[in-house]
Length: 307
Image (cartoon, rainbow, N blue to C red; front, top):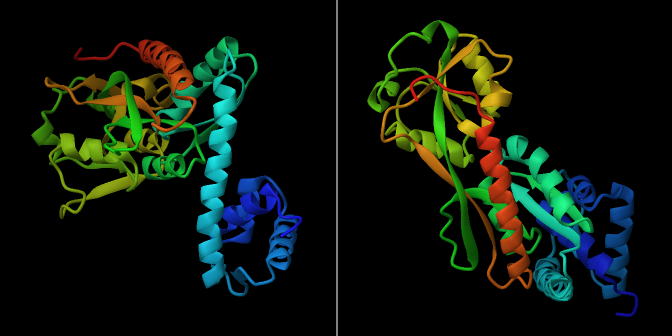
């Protein structure tokens, strides 16, 4: 198959993963027509169709499914070879793809990007925000080098490094500022505003309140912590947010804050990567910088009532 290139494999793997030409093109940072041309060129080189075209969803042929699996293995091996070469460099340089969960990214990334750029001037940082399940999948498939998420993950092939802990803060309407801080069991009787399913912070909040996500009660959902806090300010209910989010999310909302009683709810933020990643030693150094940035971001949180 003269003419077959890594570009062909990367574009086709993106199409196989997304099942949609438009989304695959966006992921590869090219136009949809350009991606389509590359996939057709790959099919011509192979001499057989890899994709069933037509309809809204793109489907792979039987050969396409097997080809996609082999392409992922090849791309992963090539990335590992590239990382092996980079691991010999000091300091760390080149592309570094780090995923961050949405309940951490807006509050940590501004400081972290500056800190990493200062420590590694030659680093091309590629942050990506996504929910935990997506980030873990991307690490396992070598589409990310590491991710900053809530621990534990308990994935045998992943290295977990705990970075820092942070508490959950109760957000109530402003008029509730002088009321007693409710106990966890009392939150079960209140209108609790939560993130949509798929966010690990939602599951942690439900666990603290001893609630099931399928419980027959009124739970209202939002797509972001910002939305939840603004809903609280409008008097719709109460919510929990991580302390790192306090300065940004509450500065323009008519809400009051309180620490919950002991034992206070907390979460552990950590960094994970594949144990087989040749950059493991460098990623431990990066994790130390993330720890420092996270600690500083938490210290920026405003003083809270009930501390």
